[in-house]
Length: 590
Ligand code: NDP
Ligand code: BG6
Image (cartoon, rainbow, N blue to C red; front, side):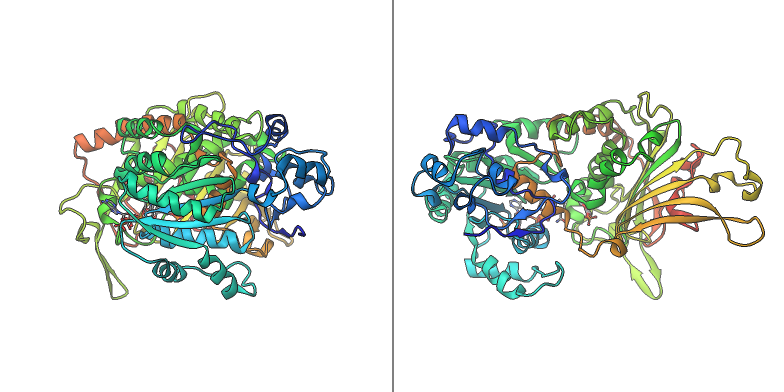
């Protein structure tokens, strides 16, 4: 069978077949290949996604029919059987090689829920559409709700789109995909129900090497129940078993540590894939490339040249529909402690030894552990109130029926953070996150220092801060990277203005940007951990925010109210002003 190559951005397909080298506690691991042969596959770099122009192979498991020497990626795919001819390969694998081809069973636990419908199934379909899923795969939805396979398919089909390049055969592909989706109804704490799931999975796996991925798309209070039942009754007996865990990972240091302890009763750390979907966003992933592969940036990446860094998240809608969840967490736990802090760590880390997941995560954790404790005076919190604009009445946070009256939960927060190390000493990292604001956007803004002895300072008037360079990495929407520079306005006079060197993704790249969940799901299938949170990173993140959260709650600090659809509480501007900073997103030339 011929190999066909798809343009799957993050996959080399290689590691998809490469066995997980961590011994899963869930299963008795019977390796498909002899140990000596496997040794070769260990050398597959986990930095595969960083290769430029890597293609995603369409049909995993078809490689045996071709000579491994033909294409380098195939050597890797067959588990390190480097240099073997097709006959030798078949000798090792056995005559009935198709039975030894691995299969991946993906079980979405909580399949009846919002996240599964909105994100997980559409991401899986997009991967299928892009030919990034292995040849043999099955998707199971698992939840308590009663549903038939047909009903699951109908539910899922409503949120699937053929957004990718609007290619042909969409309906056909969708139908094929849906035929590989099944549903199993069961209780979350029932080992028996998971044993029934196991039977169904086995039927679909058809005796092949089985790899199993469980996606916990459920409220966190039932994570451990599910992991316990699934580990006892539905883990793979001969392949890997991995579990994707959705946030929130606890509410503070203690609950997070308890959750980790609970998970580790049944799983090894290597099997736990804690997802922070912001790490799967294209421009967040690009941060390291921008910095470490462009000489013009890395030398400037320090306190010597950078005045401040701003990490800004804003949404133009409230907590509609999620008030119950949100009120228990608030914006600091929902966005800052994870999404923005993860971006900060990636932004500020030292050069890792390699692109290996552990090397990158080691550097990130060092940043987190070097952060100064967060003081209450460096934090501003807010909550949106109702507001009428253009004749439309927008509800306040506490108007939501699922939110307790008088709730003090912040829907907005701004904070000034500092990294106590040689590179970043004294540089404010300002974070701002809020719901029900004027716009929806996420960006990283890097404001550079003044040019020493600037020859042109007279041309800038009195506000020299407005004349410094600013690098903006707009994560969403309209992904872009632009650098504000000073420039002479063409003509005979000497007038300067600020212009943008602008890399607007939509103009530069014709291909649509994959959703973060696509990248992360593919990475989990491939065993690539770089974009997932390790437990020590999580501990360090909670260590930073837990004392502040406790103080806010113990002192019952009232949030500053701001109108729905505004640019947030004025306190955020005063906080920034304390450090001689102006928020870049509110500037007239933002
Ligand atoms: P839901 O509240 O929709 O829950 C998912 C499913 O879990 C439900 O369909 C329900 O299935 C089951 N469930 C819900 N509540 C309970 C309960 N108290 N006890 C037992 N089972 C319950 O969650 P989402 O789909 O919105 O999110 C899933 C996970 O992802 C959560 O941890 C959430 O915090 C996280 N998350 C969600 C995001 C989103 O945009 N929705 C974004 C980021 C993270 P059934 O009754 O059929 O068993
Ligand atoms: C989730 C938060 O993690 O991220 C939500 O729980 C938030 O409150 C969402 O709306 C934002 O994600 P995105 O990808 O839409 O920016």
